[in-house]
Amino acid sequence: MNFKETLKHYGITSIWHFTDKSNLASIKKYGLLSLRLLSQKNIDVPCYGANSFSHFLDRSKGIDKYVHLAIIPDHPMLYIKKRNGEIPNPIWLEIDVSILFEKESLCCNQIANKNSARCYNINKIAEVINLKRLLNKPAPRDPIKRA
Image (cartoon, rainbow, N blue to C red):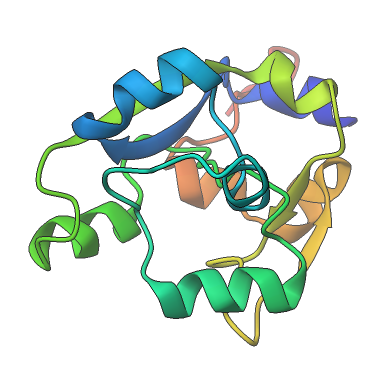
């Protein structure tokens, strides 16, 4: 099953990005940009979702050129950021999955900048991530096979 078929199979039509509400004006003006582009364009970000160490790790792994997205709108990292007060007014931005096919996209088997994380071409998502478990959805039954 290719990536588009996998998304359809699991009913995934959106991907997600969490941010603080204070960033909306900037996102509306410039778009949702990677850390690298924000730095290059010298754009002021009122409330980063990550700290300077996380940014350092992103740069060192070369993933600062990507916007971090989630396949589920309930990412554990947001819980941690809320609990620590790093994102006081969190919001989720819902993004159509078609964006994944416009440019190079990667998927990771865990938080992308962890030392043990491995990033793969998005077409390998079904091999890298147990989507059935992540989405807590049983695979649809084959209508020909009856229990």
